[in-house]
Image (cartoon, rainbow, N blue to C red; front, side, top):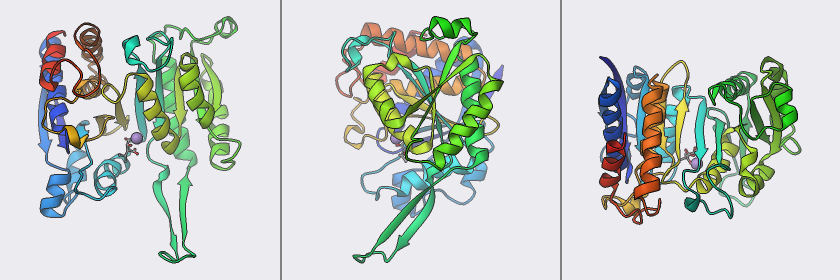
Amino acid sequence: MKSYDIAVIGGDGTGPEVTREALKVCEAAGKKFGFKLNWHPYDFGGDRYLKTGEVLPDGAVEELRKFKAIYLGAVGHPQVKPGILEKGILLRLRFELQQYINLRPVRLYRAEDCPLKDKGPEHIDFIVVRENNEGLYAGAGGFQYKGTPQEVAIQESVNTRFGVERCLKYAFDLAQKRRNGKAWKGLKPEDTAAGKTAQLTLCGKTNVLTFAFDLWWRAFNELSPKYPTVKTDYAHVDATCMWFVKNPEWFDVIVTDNMFGDIITDLAAMIQGGLGVAAGGNINPEGTSMFEPMGGSAPKYTGQNVINPIAAINAGAMMLDFLGEAEAGAAIENAAIKIINTKIKSLAAGKMGHGTREVGDLVAAAL
Ligand code: IPM
Ligand code: MN
């Protein structure tokens, strides 16, 4: 039987609770589809930091590098100053493991979970490819005259040709293969006639960020001829936000930089039903990838069995897909859709009509 070794960082707050449900559902999928999952737990997070003063111990990154996948529950602890755990665990792993893609599918499963008027599952089904190693997240910049009235704070966006191009390539490849050869239904007749089957939208700010997005724009247009079936499209980031609300059906695959990707995917999560269902993968296609629900540690719900584990379960599905168990990944997502549509009152924490554990059980049983 095939088996996979996976590092598990439950992390802070509700992270461990939702992780438990995700692992439970992945294991049930393994039983059904004939593979075994060997979990390797790590206690990284706020509690360990408060006890030891250490965010990631020496050698942790090298140890994690041996795994093909890491499952991460959440980081963020109310007693730890913001930034320490986020930078010291999440961003450090994203960077050092060269997880250069942050992949965030946005799919609405049930019309009533969407705050937009007259929008249903047929309108909201796109995916955001967020650059995950550069941009404003690179940590470039500094202070001058800190703490004085003359203080200067500079935060620079780093965009390398190499980093931008590998991200764009990933997005083009994904657009090409994502619907298994079936055409995206948002295409116009003239696009279809021209042989297009998918659309890739570059989300940027070419009118103001005339260095960074000039590079993105040139690289995007230089790659485009290699992907004749992918229609290229461009939207400024502010307009992207407007269209997420007004016409989300205009999007198939979106590619963008790290900061814009962070922002638009929170908005996207809201139109797909909230952080209770939104999941993401930090992908290094050749190395160690890390999968996480987008919701964060939600400290106020910790230990109450009220948090929605579906985002975490979806992250598990993405992980299995990444490991090559596409059938199992799809089966988990379909089971979650079925349970949402038949058993879940609301996707919000405490309002599901079931507890966290029970939702995990329901999804596992629906596989
Ligand atoms: C996310 C989060 C992180 C980010 C934070 C916790 C550092 O908001 O995964 O989107 O900004 O990338
Ligand atoms: Mn974010």
